[in-house]
Length: 257
Ligand code: URA
Image (spheres, protein in one colour):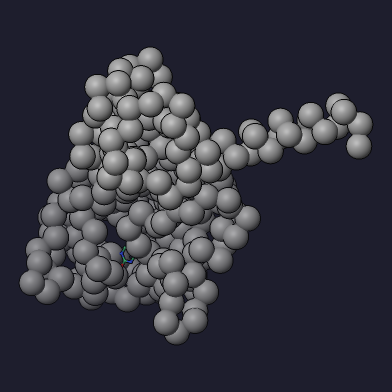
């Protein structure tokens, strides 16, 4: 091996170790947790406010290793994780959980080439297709699914029979789906034929099987259900079973919700 190649290998392995967080100087580790700058981190160490695995560390050269527990004033600190936001066009026949006792395909099977672990934001039924967001940003997932934030979800619904205008008005004003009267919704007919109708409905609640139960409450059977948007994030033309990362603009929109 040439000297150059040897040095190159050493350098690469150092970079890899740092990236995986295996070894890192304590002050750099604290800064990478987003707690403060590296210079201020040195002050924290000097002032004996940092513990590693329960022991106060006040020396600058201390090296943090993988699985070390680093605390600032008795609070655990961890390096900032890279946030990933995925939009998947979920096909019918997949469940929206990370694993399934009955061994049915899960949406995770469609994300096998993704190197970050993400989890679904809310759920879609086995028989529902369309837009599903997945992320490792727990705070964002909480915000998107909590009823108080009223994020509207848009669905395109195909139902059996011709939907009447009085029934559309009932759906708009709220229907009884069993122990719950649904909140006001935006509903419009896209196409009304003799034996089937296409309807668009926007709701901000997320009760179990809510759209199917709403249509059942006014006497229609849902044949197909597709989620086409969540807030301003649109499914667009992405193929069934495929996914893409959200754009910076979309992420910004979610952050500002
Ligand atoms: N409403 C339903 O009935 N099913 C879904 O998957 C989503 C909303």
